[in-house]
Image (cartoon, rainbow, N blue to C red; front, side, top):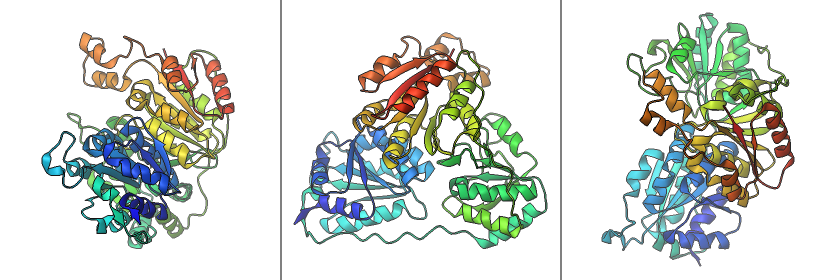
Length: 515
């Protein structure tokens, strides 16, 4: 015989789940025990649920298969919602397991009882609370199928603790159907080829599979014969970048330059959604391009890379626009600036690195500079919920132990999931953490200025500056078991990165002090 938790875990393992990012509590103890009884699933402890859910997001983006999260009741799930929101926007497969009270205890409304379904539905493509022991294997299998299905994303499975403990037939296991490969619409291909063949000014707005190497090369072929401009969506889940690939810029974040980039052009969606402003601004349309100027080639989840290849073939496009080559930036001595940081990191990246980017201070300068870097993968904050960068780097490092991972992070947003450092240290993950330390919420100060409000008024300063007290990154990092150093000049950062790349025993942190 086996218990219900073992059955769920075996079903997940046999479907390809290899990691469980966990922050368990009393109602998950049978599942914790099952992790010792069922081999093949690595247990990784996060000190905060947002670390677990963000790590599962980073893992899923890089592995292409779901990691599992193990969360404690409704409040534990609530602590992880922000990064489940980001994962939903990234369409990342995650098997999100939430423990619950015994079924008989729910009617007493004890202190930790909550409406888990209402919390989970907005960030899940699939939700179910297991009702009986006969449903355990089937529900687990269907949850995993949903993570990889047409909608692709977070599947939340609630496990009452009595069903985790119940004895079940040892031969039972769920069968997960094979997930069909993504497809594309050939009728759309013909229409888009005709549209682009007319040589009208056009933009290929690319996301999802279009930003793979295959998709980018096909887009470059199209651009070479039509003059179309290739743009990435502003915050892609994953994009390949660097030498040998076309230099595809991102659609700007602020509405004015974004509208300018699209103005007067047909916008062809290849794995991206129709572009809208990040926020609603008075006097500015939320739609960045008129609906009549937008044409769909492939939606997110469809085979946008293959659709682009089919369009290129229809156009007889055989040559790509010029690809970039690996080239070092010239670094001037002096104080650190966001542009200098972007170039120094671009120079330092080893082949096949992964860079998790969160924060506007150095994010855009790095992405601009990184076209010259060695080949690498960039992961960005898809949903805008802060606290994504460090956990995503953690999960990517677990998924790809053979690749070097960098977390390019701003100081304010790093504090949301700073506990990630402890898990990186415990798991001996050689992540290089780069903290852009400008001691402020710079984006909020920018938004104050955009709204015609002062940034130096007492409460505006109180709510946007991080100087009283200043965050002691050296002590904080070392307190989590992560060696740290500080760089204030370009030469110091170059040397710090050299030392970081030579250090393989675990994570290390560099505070990059900006004026």
